[in-house]
View (tube, rainbow, N blue to C red):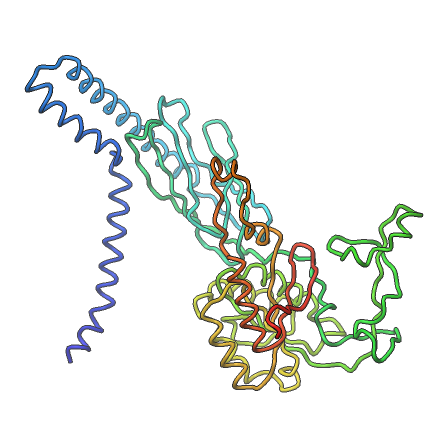
Length: 437
């Protein structure tokens, strides 16, 4: 029975540990002396005890008194400023509400204002938003600091917490505390340039194409150039005559209609895949995609409505730690005809969800099409800096995803089925062939 007592006491130990960490964080934030000032205080004590008291060094005596006076002045100013910032900021934002819907890459103008006493000498105020799904930018309004929020991740948010740090400019005194704001924010994935027609296996229309031609139809029609169109489709002769960019457009081919199953796997670095999933959702409800169904991690249901699918896609952000197990839970609800034409949108970084992919493929004996994504920012960050000057004087941020790591992911997925790589910046897509023999 000892193991049972240990199991029952484990949650209590976790709660005690979490409470201790929280108390230490709060106490450390309210303790006004920094580590540098503590070291200086120890050094000044050594100077006072061994030099001033023992040898009556008047110069060092004046230096110690001057440092103590400066520390006390900074401490008083820091305490007064922190008290003003805390109480005035809380009173200013007491009855404010913040409700808005936006998308990744958009901009939110927050009504939250933070008091910044710029008139206090030697004092600076720093503000940090603790929610990683937003990027915060200051908007100065006199003694008040407004802000704009730029979403970097999808999800539903009910509270935003800001860490406010008041310190002197020499770094000897510092007080930090957290202030929370109740919100109701719904952030959708960003819109992409990805064209669904380039990946789906069914099409319909009034055009006629050769039976052995491209399932999308021959490039016999023309339309104006749009952002994200491949440059190889631009009619340069037409541009030379009319100075207008025109591209070839595929004429829809008549093919047999097929059911399609699209599943979104949530995990680390899945925002680009969420952008692609939004492109699939935009096709739901149309006549040519009436038999397409969509599911996402954590939803535990199949949908064929864009609004319901978008809601499930947003909520999947809170199920990243499930490791894609929803795929095997929802699979029994999918029709066999749709399972034969399965698309799985995966993150562009390996994770625990790979085990669920393997189980899914082995259990249903199918080869789903895996859709992964890259971006220009990701590809540039993967290139090492070659300039010696920049290496010496500029710090290059380490990329979140190594190119070799992404290559190994694509190679591993290609062992289960075809892999389609989509550039979310341009909308260009191509099959992955690096893992082919």
